[in-house]
Length: 428
Image (cartoon, rainbow, N blue to C red):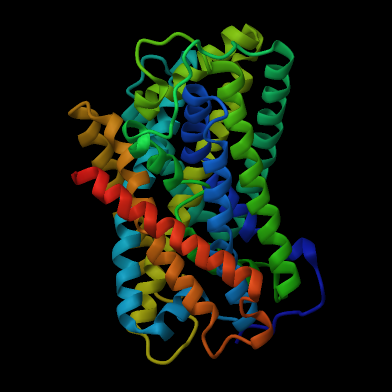
């Protein structure tokens, strides 16, 4: 039998799950979408960045709040709503997993080609190497290795990004274009949806935070209190929001107004990832080239690592939960082969998708598709998380109060309306 968890307050032992969510969030949505938004539209999309983060806030909050309040994961809560909800979650998360893991790993692989020693190496081969390295960390060291790696990378990323913005402010940027583009047009509507899809991250990541809380408790032997969980959550969420702003600022300060044959938003994500490094170096100074590259590659590696741990962990947990009687805690230690097999299968699917899109030269559609899938599934996950927080097993004092209820209703309305408008726009 395992020893009982300590309830003595310890913020240091509680920190981790929220930072891991930030590591997953600070990736495609920041280095690509946020920077592209600033590069093409200046500061015009700042209101949408704020609204997307604001309206997703309560639903991300519920991921850790539910676990701290009940001792269960969000997946237990979905099961309490009905097995159909849990099965639907499994379908949607599998749909997100293959696309998204392949996308973030591919960008990391392309960024590595920026180094002279990798210039002639096939980026798909580098993508496979990055993926295998992340699999080794996720499966080999389990939560401890993931936790240490993510915290190191997030610290390095924050320092590099803030310094790059300060340098851009000092240089004064490239100036605004003579005829600024507006994102609030029918032509640009689809791109705005893509922009919000991963801002700050797909909403099914809330399940990961819930699962990582259990892993953190088993690692440290410390029961995470509500106060500690909320501090950890807000630290990670605030970091992801602030860095999203900084990446948009980099695009607006350095790239906005730069002459281009095609708009930045129409560039394939992998092409843009390398393009903006060169333009930063031209505007800020050649010496800064590898500083910006470092911010970019650490950002994407962190995202790839957390995604390769998070999605398979959630899928295997769901499978174990569906096959167990009662409400025992089915972590990755029960039937560990399920977790390992799930990880390998998801990674194989991701690499296969990358290879197919690379071979047929349609990489520009890859990430856009992943972000659209994330956006259109947002209302469903938001609805589930709100319902779960109002279940009878949640103590009354931890259920959403007036402010969170209103913000939840507004968020549900916002994402539902935009999803409907996007579907109409897409087919009409």
